[in-house]
Length: 174
Image (cartoon, rainbow, N blue to C red; front, side, top):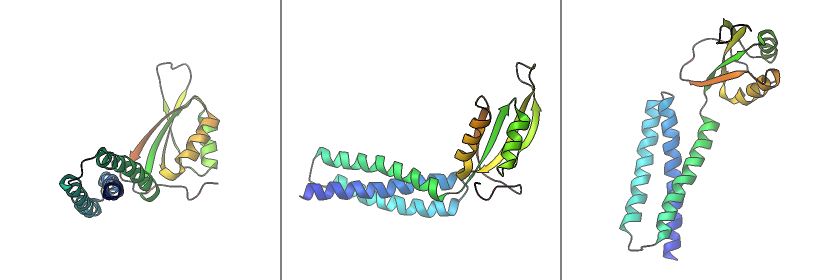
């Protein structure tokens, strides 16, 4: 009974501290240093307590290792889900297409702001266009589906944006 209780405690506390670590790293990438530092303080305090208990126990069992490792794995999963839900962000989307008018007009009709550049590729017999957009990450799946429907051969490059000033972002998906 003591082994099961210890393994469960280690498992659930590892889920908590690893989830916090995942969120902390994303906060750092987003430039939220002070909040990330506070999360890191609590995360390491929790981690230290669970490691101390796991190492100092007289009980030797593979279940302690499994609980520790399993908590880490599930904590990573939960942390990434939390970060997707609660940490806002924007994406820079670049689309290379030969169907400029069709794609750009349809994207604008769906509320997206689009800048269009004429470009040349290796095969310059067909005119090509680069469409550049900044979108809220919550709208990306809608955007990707829309682009795929408009031009299944479009080349899409997506980068996470750290900072945006001014510009237009759509409010809601139509």
